[in-house]
Each structure stands twice: as C-alpha cells, then as structure tokens.
Length: 149
Image 1: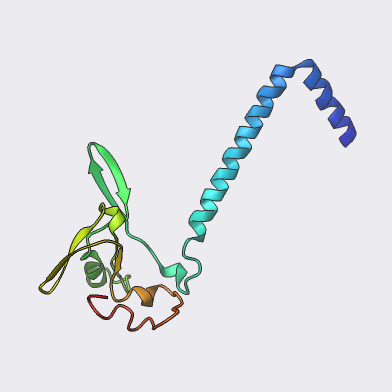
Image 2: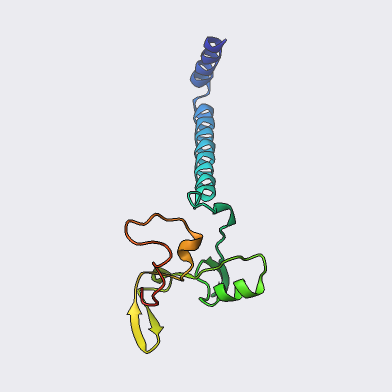
C-alpha cells in the first residue's frame, strides 16, 4: 500500500511539477507555522513553572496609548503593589519589580537623603517570599531587608 502511494506521488510529480511544488511549499509553510506556534505556546505556558507557587504567580501589565497606538508593557507604577495588597482581597502578596532596561539606560533612586542614578533590576522586600530561587550565599529572609541592598 505504501509502495503504491509513493508510486502515485512520483507519477503526479512527473506529470504536474508546478502543482507539486506549490503543494509542497504550502505544506512546508503550514508545518513551519504550526511548529512555531507550538513552540511559542509551550514557552508561554512553561514560564516560572519551577517556582513552588507557580499557579499563584501573576504579572500585571500596563496598557497605554503612545502616538495613537496601544502598547502593552510590564512596567507599572511602583506603588501598585501596596494598592493591590490593600484594595484587592484576592491578592495575598504583591511586590514591585523594576528593570531599568524598560525605562532607558538608568533612572533616579531616592532613599532618605541619598539620591543616585541606578541601572539594573530592582525589587521589593517580598520578592524572595513569592519566588523560590536557590541562594549560593545568604537567605531569602534577609536578602532585601536593607533599603540599599
């Protein structure tokens, strides 16, 4: 049976070469698109699965209009974490998480009387209570206790 199908494919290839290549191109494109969509969905569903409470982790995104175009990005106001904990009863813990790459090269930080330009990733105290990262040195309870850490 399989040998018979290969024979039919060969005969059609010899008789209708252009149709064969159009069909082959369409099949290849469809399979490549399906593979890329599968890889994208698999990546989206596997993010943060190594954390203990991965089913309770959510990230807030901000929708804003920029030059008539709606953009969606993760940088949200730093005070949003406090407001979420107070106003939304379903939120058990919220923590701010800021990356300077989202705002350009650097931004200004103020702690008491100290002002400085900063670059990097900045998070609140409760970051390591939400996310279960392993530490080479130190522990999660004291890692971000100091405001200048």
